[in-house]
Each structure stands twice: as structure tokens, then as C-alpha cells.
Length: 110
Image 1 (spheres, rainbow, N blue to C red):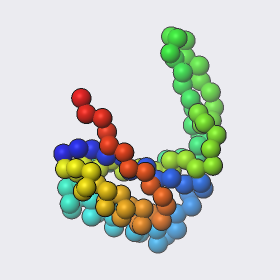
Image 2: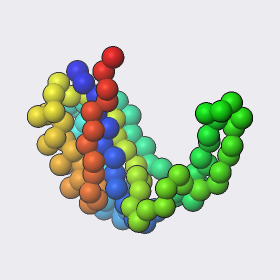
Image 3: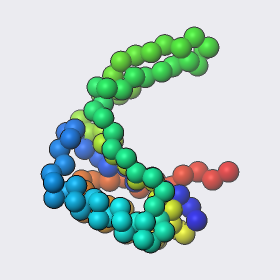
Image 4: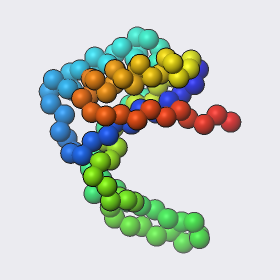
């Protein structure tokens, strides 16, 4: 089984309605029941981020997101599916349930 990242794209932190949260919970249960569930979570606002750059051996810490953008990743699912053709409709359902655009990307395999 391959693993995929479904990123939820949002422009407002904490904007999910009660109905959207209930639909997300139902989607999570569907993923579990179908054997696709790996992990999921919501993320705090971009301004809570800290960028860490230790490429030269001396870490530099910078408050805020690494890039200024209107949209950002507000949450995510990591799912398992036998192939892209199975993962794609799950991503479509994720978009419908959270009422946001999502991005589907496969993890690289070794």
C-alpha cells in the first residue's frame, strides 16, 4: 500500500463550522473502516510557526511562516491506498467533507 498526503488548503484559521467538523469526523471513521487511516491533524495558524535553518551548523530561528501566502495548509490526512486511483476519490471526499480545497500527493518510496 502506498501512502498519500491530503493537505487541506485554507485562508482562515479555526474556520470550520460544527457541521464541517461532524462531516470530517464521519470521513475519519470511513477511512478507519476502509483500512486507509494512518494519521490526521489540524495545524495552528501560520503566525505560530518557527522556521529553523541549521544548514551551516549554526541554527537560526525565525518567527512566522517560511513564506507569506494567502492560503496555507490548515490540516492534513495521511492515508494508505493501493494506488492513485483509490486515493483520488478519497481526496475528493475529503474536500467535500471539510468544505475546502485539498491537495493530494504521494509519499516518495525508497
